[in-house]
Structure formats: C-alpha cells, structure tokens
Length: 570
Ligand code: ATP
Ligand code: MG
Image (cartoon, rainbow, N blue to C red):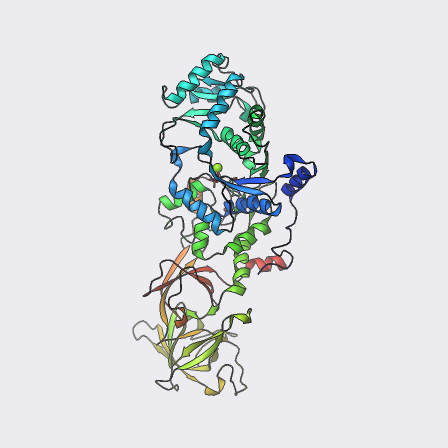
C-alpha cells in the first residue's frame, strides 16, 4: 500500500539535488535538459544501496522528462566479469527502470579517452612519469606538507607523446610508467597533486580483450564518459566530494573538443547504510566466496537478487528508497523501515493461507472417521476483492506446537488441558487428553472434541472463546520446507571501514533456520517460485526456486510484528 501522502503519480517532496536542477532549469543551463546515468562497476551484484542510486538517477530523469543511461564503469579489467554485467541489467529492469537504447560501457570510450590524453600532453597538461609507486607516494606529501615535483614533470611534449604511444604499444613493463596530469603538487587537495590518468596493466578485459595494456583511471574516465554521453548531472556518493575539483579539471581541459556534448556537474549525496547489514561489495563478495552464504542471491544478502529471492517486491524497494530521501551527510537507516515497506505492500497483495511450521498432531475424537468438510476461507480480509477459497477439514489435523501448553500461565488463550480454542475457519475444539512419548515425555498428540454448533460462518452456539489458532488437515496437507531468516549481522552495520575480524565476529549464527517438516494447506500445490503469501500468524513467505513437486520450499520474507510502525507512532 502506498502511503496516502505520497501516491505514485504526484511529485515526490523536493531535496537538495532537485533544488540544484530546478535552479539549472531556471537559468537555462544545459538547454533545459536533464540527463543522468547509473554507473555500476561490474565487479559484483547490485545491493540495496545501489537501488537508492538507481531510484534517484532514473527517478529524476522520469520526473523531469529527461533521460538516464546505464553505463558499466569497466575501466578496471582485473576484477570485472560478464556474470555481473548480466545480473546488473536484470536487477535494474526488475526494479522497474528502462535505459532505452542507452546502455554503454566506459570501455566503449577507450580510444577517445586515449585521444583526449594525447591532447592534454600536447597542451602541456600531462606527462609520463617513471617514478615507482613507492616513490610517487613519497613525493606526494601529506595533508600538512606539500608534495615534491617529479623529476619527470618537465619532459618535453615530444618525449611525452613518444613515451605515451610506446606505453600503449606495450614496450614497457606493467607499473613501470604512468601518465599523470600536470596540476599542482602543492595543492591542499591531495587529489590535485598530479594524479595518475593512465597505468600500464596487462590484463584481459571482458570486452576489449588484449587490445589495451594501458587503462585509464576512474577519475579521468568518469567525467569524460559523462560528457561524451551528454550527461548534465553526475550524481555520486559523498566519498567523491574531494575528487570534484579533479572532475572539473578534466572537463575544463577537454571541453573545447566538440565530441563532449555537455559540461556535466558532479553532485554528491550520502550513501545508504542499513543497520544489521553488510553493504560493502568487497565484504559481500567475501561472504559468497568464503561460503558464509549460498551465493549472491542467498535470501539473507542485501543484494537485489537476494531480496528478490527472499520475496521482496520492486514496489516495496522503490517505496523504501522514496522514504529514505537523499541527504548530504552520512547516516544509517534502520532496517525495520525496509521491512515495514514490504509488509505495507504485501498486506493488500498477499493471499492468507494456513501453514503449520512445527506440527503437533490433534485427533478430534467425536468427528466422524471419514467425513471431510470444505470450509470457506476468505483470501484477504484487507482486500475483499481477492475472494475466498475452500479448505478441507477432517478428523486428524495438525496445529502449531507452540499453540499448546500443558501448564499454561494465566491469560494463555490457546490450547491446554481442558481448555478451548477456535480453529480458524472451522470449529471450537476442547483439549481432552494429552498423549506423550513414553520414553521422552514429549507431547506427541492431543485428543480433542469439537462442538458441531460452532462452525465458522454458521455458528449457532453463541459461544465465545478468546483464542484462534491455525491448522491443516493431516490427510490433505502438503509437505514443505520453510526457511526462517534473521539479520546477517547481530549488531552494527554501516561502517565500511571495519576490519574483517570485526564484522565477521558480528555474523549472526542463527541467520538461517531451516524447518524441514512443515505442512501447508493443499491449495499451495504447485506454488510457482516467487509467489507470495501471508501464512496466518507467521509472516509473509515466498516460494523459493528450490521448490519441487515433491517438496515445496518457502522463504520467510518478514514476520508480522512491525517494529517500525511502533517507532512511527511513538
Ligand atoms: P561498494 O562500495 O559497495 O563496492 P561502489 O560504489 O564501488 O560500491 P559502484 O558499482 O561503483 O559500487 O556503484 C555504482 C553507483 O552506485 C555509484 O554511483 C555509487 O555511488 C552508487 N552506490 C554504491 N553504493 C551505494 C550506497 N550504499 N548508497 C547509495 N549509492 C550507492
Ligand atoms: Mg565504485
């Protein structure tokens, strides 16, 4: 359900980025165009933080009647894989966004980027430097001390052109030379102290193969890729704030070239951090590669593919991204808000069904042996249009183990010796006898009686009981495996700089609990992977791709108790 104050077709509230765009439009900047891009590096699967960036970039384009490109930032060949390129496209589409015919790769521009570098050399703005990386570090200076100029800084244009061309041809070993911008070794901004533009690296690129052995750096390739595509607003996360002068330097020094279609502006916003959640791609990759989870789409992962498999809807994720908004300082969002969003969405959409996760057998001793009654059950009390279904009731049923207590405390309104309870959509039953395992003393079966006058919808008894529990008919129920999840991290989350040992110590050992012997009502036969239900009293669940005809498998998306709604009310 959309909140009444933010229906999908009304403009979302303003934020500082929209204020900038509004001002640009007022001033007639960029000929009134708004053109953004989403630039993932294909070195992992997208996560919920990326969803924030996707919703922001595509959302702004939609709202202003502009365009948003998908661009793979594939300038770093050693880490990139085709698998990631494909998953990223799938995830952006699934979230509901469309890049039209504008899917690009930074590697599409390698030749142009090279030409721009040649121009910078010719203008005396770039030089080939032979310092080792260790020496470059020493020459760089610190925040309090200026750097020292490289002895290669004043090479002639001719020598630089010759060396750069030979770098490209592969005449020098990896790491032996770089191309650097000639800016200012005394700049208070370390990014401006003659930053590296190109490095030599013999690595096979997923698109250009072995054509190149020099690769451009992000800070050089990104602004030029933006301008080549005519991007007007280049939105990135806060850690690039200190890089903005370099972004502008690159653009300003190449702008006279007619291939650049815009003078893009970099705007930084706060990245999303979530409590109890690992967000860094590097650590997510570790979770996968070291076997802490079953894969990138493990339903505990904060990846889009993990959330999808868990049962999240694109609507809920977009709603979440709208609600968190965009800010200029970092903070951590409570994961309860994300969970609230999926509950709100599924409350109206998901049919209610009955499933028993930890079954306890109940024999209704006064119910005829071979009678089966079809009980009428509404599919969703929040949404009457979803209609109703019939569920079979018979003499032997299963209830939830936790709905019976042999020695209940006061105010326990479920089943106990001599106590009565209503079976949802069926009858009131009374517990007459408790059968135990002779050896272990464990309760294995209850014998109950029912009152035929209490049939739901046709109750002529006028009796009231306080508790209502769910059940399934033993002869008709289907077997299912149910996977219950808790947060991956017991505490913390959001601190990108944490050491391995720190976040690994916070991993929740109970993040996955598998219940192999659950029973669900027969209407769930053949539930297609991805179909979502509310299991009465247990939460929202989604059929997993592991489901088969023999055994259904469900993931719990989220329980029913909404801690966020409480926070909002308080
Ligand atoms: P990570 O730090 O997880 O490896 P990244 O920033 O290196 O992420 P990219 O593939 O480069 O990942 O990101 C693509 C886009 O998504 C960038 O514009 C980046 O700013 C944005 N982005 C990445 N993580 C977040 C986040 N947590 N919140 C908002 N935007 C994000
Ligand atoms: Mg990145």
